[in-house]
Image (cartoon, rainbow, N blue to C red):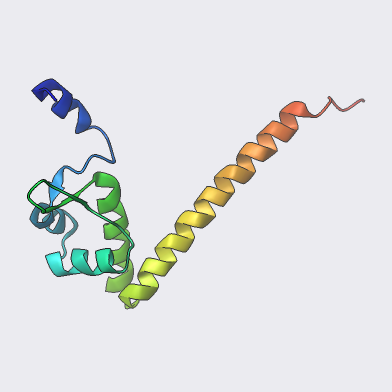
Length: 112
């Protein structure tokens, strides 16, 4: 991979660009919190060749949402489950909207 390829990947939401320390700093939490949501399997950071955790922007958004719920008093395991359910609901709504658009496109025009 060339330097130009690496810079292009920084725009990729799934590119693991952030170390654990930087990720924790960015979302205003501790490294222990990131480890805990990893252990709860909310996010799975990629590992560098040296074994260090690396986080993507997408994972940081999920971690920030978990932190928000925990800060409101939700236990970490419950916060992780809530986020998974929110994600599943969003996906189901997206699929429903696609089916609705496809059905409307296939329906014959209403006669007046």
